[in-house]
Length: 322
Image (cartoon, rainbow, N blue to C red):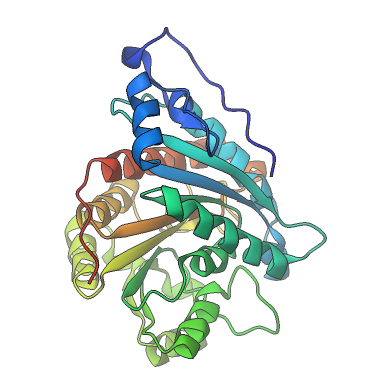
């Protein structure tokens, strides 16, 4: 897991010129940010820990358009020069790469890195990767008894298949949680009726999944109310964002661009509500395919969301878990 060579625009030294690349360091080292950021990193760990998951094996198995393995690098590049007005301390654990088609081994290794990163960071953030990323993320979180999984996605990703794909992660999570004797609390914002078969809707019903259709997610009010109702029933939240939830004009660089999608301001409002709850413990952002992107639109909007979640989370009081 070689470290990513963070660099970006520099307008001068000191906190007044701080950008994201300035506040990122390797695990066990000081960040490149201010002395205050470095001191906070030494004293209490990072505000956020990044992990890349360089995988599109799940997309390939799901007969999608490959290229998501290049997503982590593109997300870091889009994040690097964003201005940071807060005093942040971020560490980057590098990439877990899926090689030789060994998705299952890659997901296990991602879970191990996420679990280790959580020991010294308030928030872990995985940069995907296809949505097979989600199962590896969950392995790193463990069988938390009151964990809610909130997915922003046009798809349920509850497919039945002989082996894991980008379309199976939440069915896998449901099976693991059932085996561990804990509830499967799963909700999805942005579901497209034309992108999910009746079988998938039936599976969602059987598993007690809650969802909000893309048709009903076109303004913030309904979406935020749906999410806040879901948040009220859990103690901790894992937020996963599949970038194909966004309209194709906003996010063309995905395997399956959305014909309608959920507007970016609605997605942003939902993310704000999750952060404000004080329950967010983990985030992943998936399905960026730089090969299909146009003017880095998808990477840029994804970076804006990641930046917003990390910076707001750093200043939000955490809710004590029961």
